[in-house]
Amino acid sequence: MDVRVRYAPSPTGLQHIGGIRTALFNYFFAKANGGKFILRVEDTDRERYSDESLEDLYSTLEWLGIKWDEGPVVGGPYGPYIQSERFDLYKEYAEKLVEEGKAYYCFCTPERLEEVRKAQVESKSEYQGYDRHCANLSDSEIKAYLAQGIKPVIRFRVPTSGKTTFHDILMGDITRRNCDISPDPILLKSDGFPTYHLANVVDDYLMHITHIMRAQEWIPSGPLHVLLYEAFGWEVPQYCHLPMVMGKDGQKLSKRHGSTAVRDFRAKGYLPEAIINYVTLVGWSLDGSTEFFSKEDLEKCFTMEGIHKAPAVFDYKKLDWFNGQYIRQCDNKRLASLVAPYLQEAGYLSTPLTEQDEELLETLVPPVKERMKVLSDVVPLTSFLFEDKPVEDKNVYIAKGSDEAQTAEALVTGSEILLSGLKNGEAESAIEEKLVALSQNLGIKVNGVFQPIRVAITNSTVSLPLFDSIRLLGLDETEKRLERAVKLFKEN
Image (cartoon, rainbow, N blue to C red; front, top):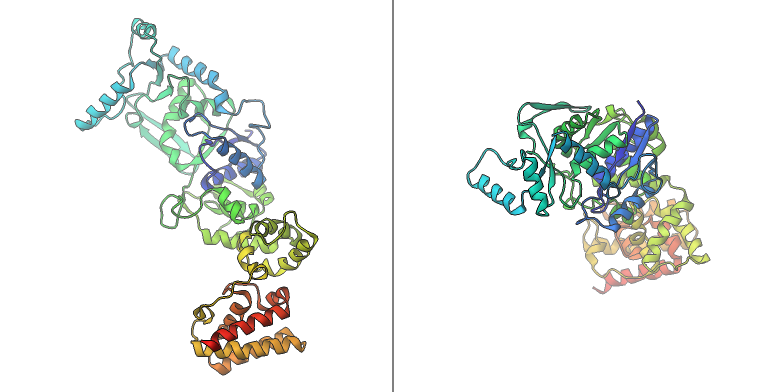
């Protein structure tokens, strides 16, 4: 069997990290099996459709380096790959089911359907849903409705007895009583728009999809889709319903947990290789221990057997850790080009970059890459070089375990040790040893000496390594800032 899988998003919002996980699983499964990855745009929900969402879909996959073998833009033998361009096909297949008695025209008005719904609720009826009022209309009745200009919907005849079973590669056999399936769902709306169920099944068949990998939330639709395949006389593809992506609280991942749109992760400064690596591990593993995979690795080693059944937790801190690792592996030249836009947006560098800016970036990148979790961290880490906003709250200088008097002594004596050593050309390691000895003499932790010095120089408790900061800032400016901090403690 030639493997053919698809990613079929609806362009009604920005690409969700869970949706991209589905795309990656499909893509890597196709590549690992020498198959085809098809992109299909399911844009039949015109009320929520947006051009921005469609563009976000394309740009997100492009940023991740995920190329589709068939689909919009690139074309293919089973196009068009945008559902709104396939309406004639859906009508043709829906009408075919009507001709064979497997579907029927329904002329019920929205008002009647609402009355039926209210009556079912008020009577607490066990039967909820469409009452099949139009299921057995005669030809003359149908002609009469049509003569009045009433446009019907087409409903699928769901068997009222028996059971329907489909096999899921992860979950095994899944069975549902036919009477529990949505009663006679609409396949084709009165305006000619297909519903998800019809378009999905027709497209998967016509595009020769062999494996359907989608989220477990679609499991309830499985039996209905199988009934549709059987009604058409088509072979059912292999199903693999993927584990849900959850937050740490056990709820489906949403904005209450943090960013969920890939665009947000990209803007904050996550690298595509980190997103690909971590997101693929959310619900999949190779051997239970290997954590780092390149895109090329996953194109070779991804297997369906490695997908977990249980819901997968999306851990933002773990993603930060992965991203930090990839940043440190990043070539300095590439990293300079990646962080430059953040510094330009902050107003620290010119647009376009000057020669002086490029030289500064070369100097900045080696120390800053060791401290960044995301690319945007470059701004707070280096802001002390571009603007001087002294910290006037003495509490910020005081490290945990120290008091104001100890901090004042650490700052005064530590500044003297630091400046004297630098001016006399002492090795940085020797100066550091003296500062450590000072902490011991004062009976405080090492950070009790280094924190006030760091805050004085960088105006922040989070910064680049001390000596890197001094080199970038210059000795004269360093001395000026240390004297200013000493004065703060002496005067108050």
